[in-house]
Image (cartoon, rainbow, N blue to C red):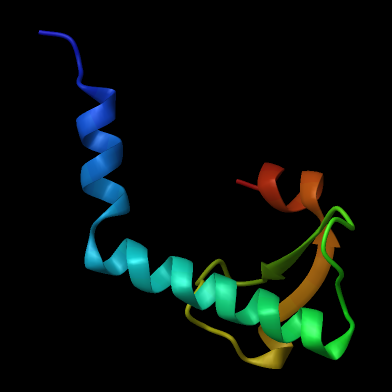
Length: 73
């Protein structure tokens, strides 16, 4: 039986943990925009050094290029 990718994606994106992680990432991005560290459309991401999206301590955050942040797995 083939995998149902649409159902898997829907189930993951609607989970409570996934929603909290996404909200935390959005929150820190908005704060960085307000402080002037990033701008909309600048090609930068706010990176969590330890990989935990809910750890929003200033020492754990850095602004990096989009390609670096999304390729560091």
